[in-house]
Structures are given as C-alpha cells and as structure tokens.
Image (cartoon, rainbow, N blue to C red; front, top):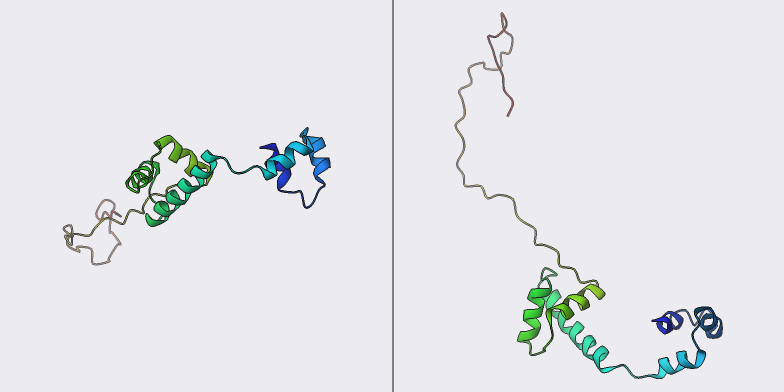
Length: 133
C-alpha cells in the first residue's frame, strides 16, 4: 500500500525523499514496481470487468446478490462477499429504480352540490361553513 502511495506522485517528488519519509526502502519500492501482478489481483481484475458489465446492463440497479448470480451464470466462480468487496472498492453502488406515481383508475369521488354559488357572505354566524380539502 505504501509503495502505491509513493508511485503516484513520483513525477512530482523524488522517490528517495518519499521513501525516507514513509520508511520504505528504495530498492523495495523499485522491486515492487517490477513485480508482476499476483494471481488473485489478476482474477479480481477479470471479475471486476464482469461485474461492471452486469452492473451497467442492469442500468446500475443490481446489487451484489443479483450481480453474483449473473457472474455465476457466466461461468466464473466466486463468493458473494468477494463481489460485495469488489463493488465497494470500485464505487459500484446500486441505485433503486424510481417508483412511478400512483396509477389513476379514472374513478372520481362524489362532488357535493354547489349550494353557495361563490356567495361567501353570511347574514349571521354559523350559517355558511367551508372546508378546504
């Protein structure tokens, strides 16, 4: 992890300075640069490509369980927790599908007769009552 931190800004700061500050040997850093990618890391990279393909095909709505089923159908074997970890590391978070507005069935409630006919002035109290719904 520290070597990766040294590798990013090495075009800005000298590697020897960063290695001294982080207590990493320069030879160890350069050996890390030349070291081939490990088998689990390459497997994870292949798996992330499959996860990303399934995630985008679902319009970013599938969570880890559905992605896991898709990956198993594609012939790759892995566990659910591994899918969850890789999705979390690659910032793939499912967003819920938007729910639509309630469907209108066309029936209307009974509308009361217009007794006031927009005449809201009353001669005395408690003659005309209004309710806003």
